[in-house]
Amino acid sequence: MIILIQCKDKVGLVAAISGLMAKENINIVSMREYVDTGANRFFARLVSEQTIDPTILLNNLRSVLPEDALIDINPEPEKKIIVLITKEYHCLSDILVRNHFKTVGAQVQCVIGNHNVLQDICERFDVPFFFVSHENKSREKFESELLAVIKKYSCDYLVLAKFMRILSAQFVELFPMQIINIHHSFLPAFAGAHPYKQAYQRGVKIIGATAHFVTNNLDEGPIIEQQIIPVDHTYTTHDMIKAGKEIEKAVLAKALKMLFEDRVFVYNNKTIVFE
Image (cartoon, rainbow, N blue to C red; front, side, top):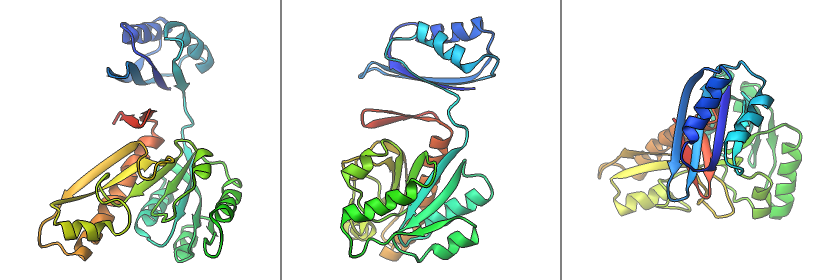
């Protein structure tokens, strides 16, 4: 079993949880916990052998945890995702290869593109592709067409794999903490268009990428994963773009792995990630 707990902190929580598990003769395989002292918030992720009905365990845990406790036992083991893309192939191709070899940790239900230049690679991997153009349409019309496709599938997360359209607040609100974006810079630096050109012109010594949840505040959602790599004065804009694509793939892959393994907690605008 995987057990996820988030609640108000108080003395004795770890003892209460482990004591209850021992009382029920449940062996804990691993337990990670963290306390945000500023927010007075407790987070825990347990992996245990399953020797009890999860519903019974849920009720028993509620009896020893604070009233506000959020408890999730045995989240869906294999998540379902829909990937949204534009023209860049590197993040999509990485997901498709991992999906083909069943190492992505989720099932790719379909790919939706506002351009059709990557339809061929989706067809090669036998993944349904839907072309939903944004051209000559209002944002409302475009997003309604996106939703029409999304609603055809069961979906846990929407993955923006270099999807270069800004989604409206109304759309984002339909998928709270379910939309993941890969941002082409080490946020908050160089947000907006042409980040690598900005980085080159500024003469930076590192470049990076950020995977984060999408919220109504553009590029300011809770950060899941960030990585950086060193660069120097010999790097051209092209060199930075090439290196940036590699780190974008790595960061998105790491963030998705953490999500699909239920290792990410969100509280306010921050994440707790138990790697």
